[in-house]
Length: 265
View 1 (cartoon, rainbow, N blue to C red):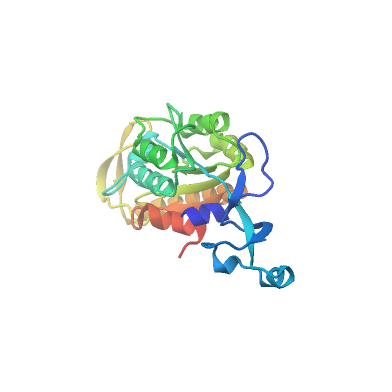
View 2: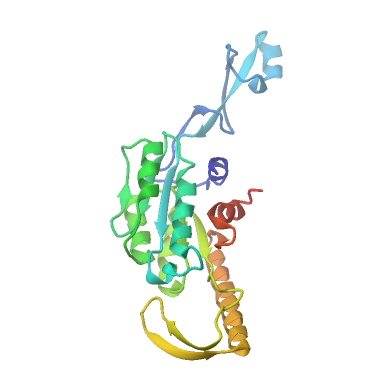
């Protein structure tokens, strides 16, 4: 996961908080120096050694640190699920994301009470941020908090079912302009089949409103078609906004979703 986050660095981002460079095991050439015991033999520049009459090591640059940030949708619609809710899956994704931290990194957890641990070593900050939950909360304020608190160039993970995508798009586009954004789209747990039949009582997860309805095979087919249409339209809109996107589904979990997002086999 960390290698994928480093490889996904977006070039050209500048401003306060942009990642610095240091000498290390990155990919950008810095200088040649004489070989010393312990240097990676793969870094030896044999042509330079022949010219200098002594072994020469290529010194390269790497990104100094990552800022790992997470914004989770904690609205009522995320409380649905078969054996685990979509919010539980979102918390799992946050744990995988923060597990990539090293002590040089810094971590942020955005929500109703945003937390950016500027002075806390990355592994400690990651544990604190991964353990932090949300009692409730819409996604847009968390995105706005990221724009106010998190440094430019941060790696931001956003997880939501995006039932209210329209009002979120402006904040999402602002985040894409500032951060490297990965979005996990939490699928409807019943997108493959609605396990209901006959007269049933349905409760709206957001409003709590209860209605009675008759569900037969035709109604289940209409539901399935409507879910697929909405999810496809939402996925297209997220990709068009310029972010990395993958499904998050209970069937295979958060680690697989992040693997799809970064094309990790």
